[in-house]
Amino acid sequence: MTSFIHGLPKAELHLHIEGTLEPELRFKLAGRNDIALPYRDIDEMRAGYVFHDLSSFLPVYYDAMSVLVKPQDFYDLAWSYLERAASENIRYAEIFFDPQAHTSRGVEFHSVISGLRGALFDARRLLGIRAQLILCILRDHSAEYAMATLLESLPYRDSIIGIGLDSDERDNPPTKFAAVFARAKSEGYRLTMHCDVDQLDIVDHIRQCLSVIGVERIDHGMNVLESDELVAEAATRGIGFTVCPVSNRYVTGDLKDTELKLMLERGLKVTVNSDDPAYFAAYLTANLESLASSASLTKAELVQLERNAFEIAWLSTGAKEELLAELAHYAAGNP
Image: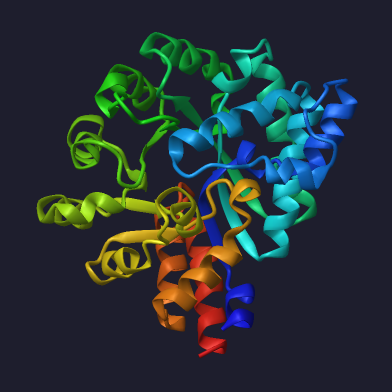
């Protein structure tokens, strides 16, 4: 099964590029940018990654970003992930980035996007991996700041496939950003939003995503199972769910493997992803391995998870068909 998972053609649709900042690269960038870190070495840095839920994770996550300053820093960050992704046979990735986490500390939007898109271009040419960018709005900032960030992104529209919503969900429901997402849709962006696992009012947040915002995907979103009505609506509309098992275990103490298998059984377009793998110590292959072991998934179920991912990906019809054919060929040759 380990060999099967490693060779399986994969898509990753829920990956925060800032969440791939490994300690080794963080030290390298700190030295390049003359930034002092409060750690003597990599082991001490890793030991400082202490969190037990979303609220305790976010300060650790945002603090690490201080070393990202110049276009080359963002290039190196994305390139490091894409090299790893290619080695895991990830054939396609949609990558979240958080521009407000950088512009709020004086880094220009252009520095962020130019570095990231340069790495994506080179990865397609040199590694054979397709990737696109999704701009994530930080929901614990104002809607006005979100709109300003959206407008700042428009000159780079050709480099950004969609808009997402992440960060602290408490008291920051999807409807807070309804006008921002309506404008994004009018500009041609695809829409997704985080509905983190087991948050306060989470079922209502999922309902808002579906009925008010009109998203095509929900990131995490496993609490949809608490409403038969929402499950039926999501299944009918083909809404994608980008689930992150090892991330779930870090912030809830549970992989939520039973729930994921139930989502599969109920016909939801559920997928598996790594979220912030530098902090959760598990990239996509490791997430699939943990899930397969815990939930006793079959090869057919693993293939279905990847079929779901390619089907809900924001790709052209031709590109989807190419990747789905590759997946089908692999499955047929590895029964």
